[in-house]
Image (cartoon, rainbow, N blue to C red; front, top):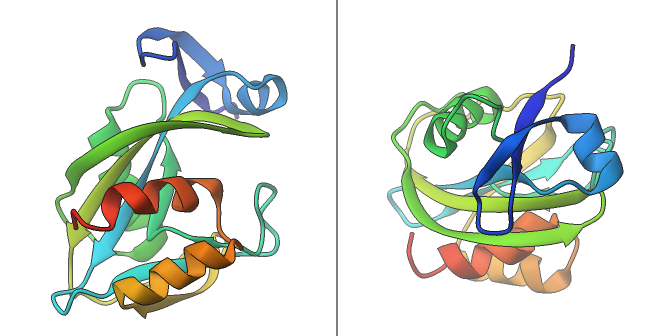
Length: 162
């Protein structure tokens, strides 16, 4: 079944919908987002993407990353995907927005944060594991470079705001 995403302009105005596979194959700009989950001690959940992922396999990733399905808001998608990928249900707060084009992705990414000390239940199809790290350790992972482009570009927005 096709997954429809928002087809958008560079200023995030909706032009219509686009099939996810077509968006990736043709470099169509679409909506996505990321969530950084923070524990009460200030540590951040970072996932390790499964080697079986088609896009950017075996890389460090945000607490949750998602495409915004046509018909849902950025915030609805963030809450949905946070729960699907980590088992955590928590309110999210908007931190910022950026655009990146790292083929096959060409997306506008909204950055969210949430706070939770609840148990983590990873989706094994998404991640092989996770670490809950101090901010300086996340800095080091991002500097090392084995990260998704959205972690690379989203971390500077989130780092001092979460």
